Image (tube, rainbow, N blue to C red; front, side, top):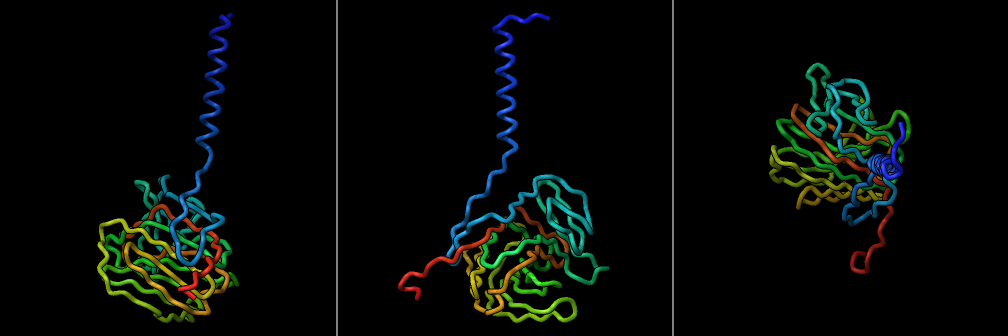
Length: 233
């Protein structure tokens, strides 16, 4: 069928425009880097919005994250993590990557869960526990850790007795730089120091105890230590 030149040009223009739009939509946009005190975020390791629904899974991948213990699923653009009584262990969803200094940001909602935690383990198999920040309805604390499974040990280094609303979304920023650990949850700041924090990290974990915890917009960057000002030295 013969088309007039004007229609042919219009048709070609439509194809080119559609191709450009599809190419642009396929590009991933890095999340904004958070304001930090210890580490300057540098190379992005992972950023997951959890905006694609995934069915409930006990062992499997969810947008690259590993549903390791408990049951995890994505619905309504939120990652839901529930502990299962038969596991006799808190639930965890993990990401594997090696980093020494790092920055992690996320949004979370406690829901009916007893507590949630953001944890990391070291980079040497079998990947012993290294550090965690815990969040409950009435307290926040940071622990340094060692061991794995039945050999796990932890020491609480700092704690704030503050209320955390169950049904509200909260933002968290975690910085681990050399032997320093800093977590900001809303207006609350936790800082701790331990030589264990300087070890290379190999696994990052979202951890829940109980049921009803939710996560979204989880991002991890490699970090570059910030230089201290004269009044910080």
